[in-house]
Amino acid sequence: MDTTRKRSNWLVTGLLLVASLTVLAPMYFTVITAVKDPTDMRGNLWLPPSRWNWSNFAEAIDVTNFGQALANSLLVTVGVVVLAILTNSLVGYAIARNLHRRAFKAMYYYLLSALFIPFPIVMLPLVKQMSALGMDNIWGLILLYVVYNLAFNTLLYTGYLQTIPVALEEAAMLDGAGPWTTFWRVIFPLLTPINATVAILTGLMTWNDFLLPLVILSDASQYTLPLAQYAFQGQFSTDYNLAFASYLMALTPMLIIYLFAQRWIIGGVARGAVK
View 1 (cartoon, one colour):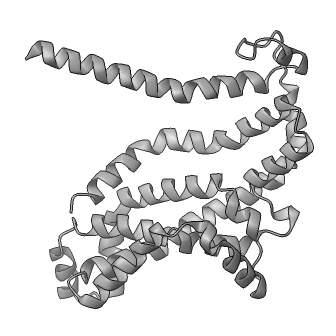
View 2 (view 1 turned 90 degrees about the vertical axis):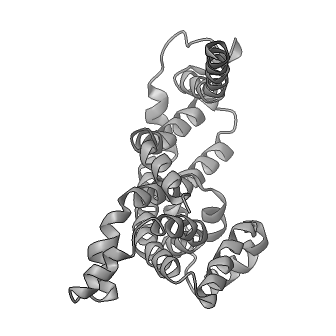
């Protein structure tokens, strides 16, 4: 028994090491490329730089208008996360407490069906509609992200809310609280783990997304970081040092947030999958 357990532990450890290398190797390559001189790119690309060139970051900030793109990404991400939590939690609550009714069950499966529709299928009609409404801007982009994440977030909220006893709401209603007060005063504070999960997953998707801003945003001053990287790469397609310096700066904020909040993601998803 002990021998079998030891072999299993070694196997799991080996798989974790291999999986870690698939992340650490590209990260190492990104970091050393970002601090190299162009002359170092002629040799072995995996070797450390002969001289650490930190000026690549300053130059990348200048040529990509990094500050403006960072502000746009922060505005979009924070706006989407806040609106998604406030609105998607309400949808999940309404469905979770009425899932025994045919209309709400149909609505639940209708929302889940959106998970199976590839974005390119609806991309062109969506672009024409947003342009006709005058919402081909950063505010329209925020609204689209909130709607586009509704299906998956409803799945998470519905599963999590089914683990919260209905007796808590019944007790609040006996004290004179209405449905609105019951949700915000009793239920919403209990949603902290799943709210954190939704915030991180929605934030990561919004921060890293390239296609939706590309087809919606028409003003270059509203470009998010992925679009700024695209424009940068098109203009400096051979200067990999500046490109990787810019990539590294773009991924650092979300990487730091994810490292501190990953336990909330795992815990929220696990509890939401109980029922």
